[in-house]
Image 1 (cartoon, rainbow, N blue to C red):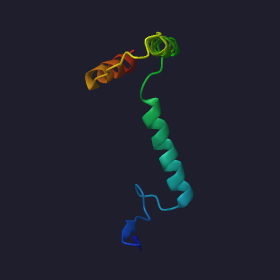
Image 2: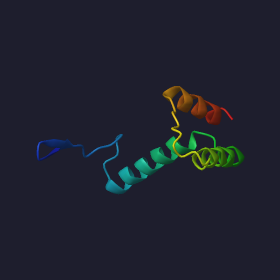
Image 3: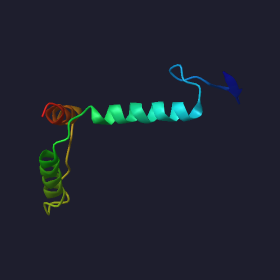
Image 4: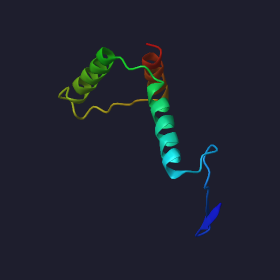
Length: 81
């Protein structure tokens, strides 16, 4: 490890030390992370339409309260579809 102004910077990531290989490793992990959740185009379109309808309902004074449970329920629904 090298010291960089008090911060430690590792020269090895998951056993890889070549910068091009580290870049590929991060790209692969990023792709795996975002590919692990299914994506249903119809369902996403329906969610966008519903959101647009709620936002543009003409009652801009109305506040929309979204709880953590609402978000978790939505994510679970999308994830298991």
